[in-house]
Length: 404
Image (tube, rainbow, N blue to C red):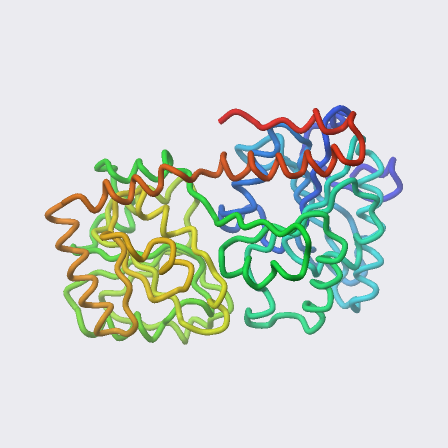
């Protein structure tokens, strides 16, 4: 442990100090870096090419008598992203945790030089960080967290405080934009994008992962977090209606008990996989599924899976998620269904498309050509530079858009 700064720090990162000429992007995230590679990881890994990125995770509980500390490490495959994980004694109340987190945060920030940009994915990290003197504060609202199961009671109040403090508010889709645009003077819609080259690997015949290789066709697959947004009853009904189809579920199960999951000989839960592994699984499917439950937790979602599945060359069948319908619902390769009967019919159409080809994929490619994470990051970077430029002409030039 390193105690020269007055607090225990376990560091697995390189000991060199950040370049003082680079802005510091301090990202507060409720999603862990190594959980599922999605919007925060796509954006922070790209910002790290021109900024010092510190990714602050949720605390981990340790023994009640242990000393609180920070664990600092470089993100695997992304050495310019530093992941900071607080470790706090269990049994503390909310005020005690916030006080300790504030102290740990101050120690870490004290060694950083350069304009500070604070970036929030959750308002729940505001209580211990609101005192920071940031040059720019950003709220990137990728989900309506208040609609999720087990949402904290004070989340909405803290979100309003964060919006009031923010210089820029980004939203992860059109529905979220419509819900937030009247609450701040600078709200910008940035729907989740896609790394087309990565998922286009699935268009080739890739070696099949061992846990999928023996599953019979047709294979209908889903990858992502399996939580309260997933329609488990819909999956159960489809599996019963089509026992000759293999339903492949890839991803961690969160906030749903194992006993709640539908079980059948043709439903296969393969667990969580890395971002790098996803194209191999996708390549072995015939149709890609998005069986989201139509409830308040999905009211504002804008799933990244739609463009990823299409980039992988797979027709998509989805429930009528609002942002999916209005952005992709007009495409021949995207089918929308409201119930199990309709979902099965749409899957049959999609299977026919997968077998016979046609111009549906060219149509999808044309739409996808206008979107990329690099473009999204570049536009965000430009807005941040404008805010910095309004405050000091010297800082704005440091915000350069990274080359892909």
